[in-house]
Length: 119
Image 1 (cartoon, rainbow, N blue to C red):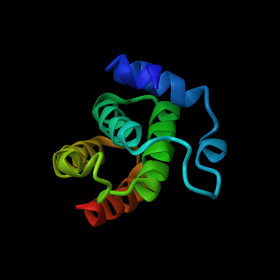
Image 2: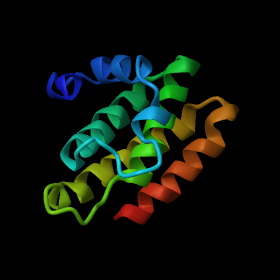
Image 3: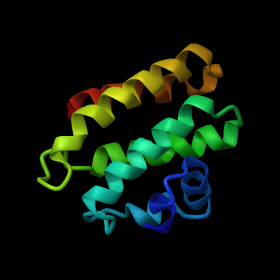
Image 4: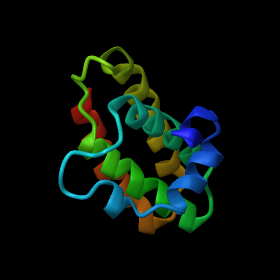
């Protein structure tokens, strides 16, 4: 929550790198609120555009995939923000796809399909 409230994608990325996504998103409903999830989606999506380090991209994609599966686009707390966040995220994924290492292409394409399903 503190990382998200800083409105700095690099801080969010650092926090994600220091956390285990499998623990955070373990089986049951995520302990992260829907507003925090949409903020994470937005900020990690923004960092994705400029990410060049393979480990950073791997972390970003792992978290984006977990969030995309966990988030509830119909939740009244985030519903009005979902369309704009999804639209920008799709632009950012396309941008990364145009310049990415081949090892990330499939993950990016899969993420794009999941994100499109949220809209």
